[in-house]
Length: 143
Image (cartoon, rainbow, N blue to C red; front, side):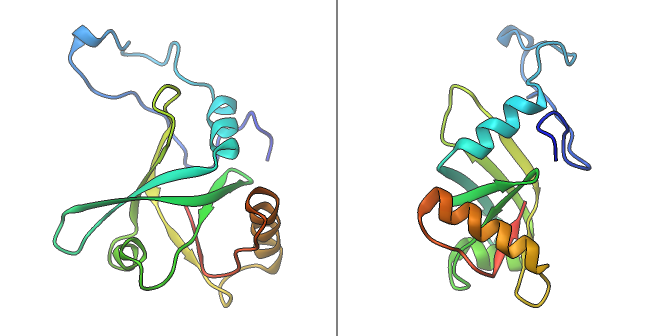
């Protein structure tokens, strides 16, 4: 995927705030997609927010890789955030950087050895190895 194109179904939006914050209503000055893709690809850590079964939020840092316009991350089956995703795949991912903010809201799709394309697993593993010096393997999540 070219860096100038947004992923399928991706939309951008501005926060809804009081007018005193000076955030414009239109898209003028909104972050271009290449900015978003570069930041997400270059980050080492991401904050992932999920919803607990009782409705309370849960946030935690994770490693992840940006491959072909998608963020891939993974965690152990017994971790709170992965158990949350099993019940509710809604997720918010935020960069650690609070100056150049990029927030991704969407759904996390679980990718397993049985459901994954071998080329995708290899691409994600190669990206993990380049970034973190480890291969991830399945399962992992596509956001």
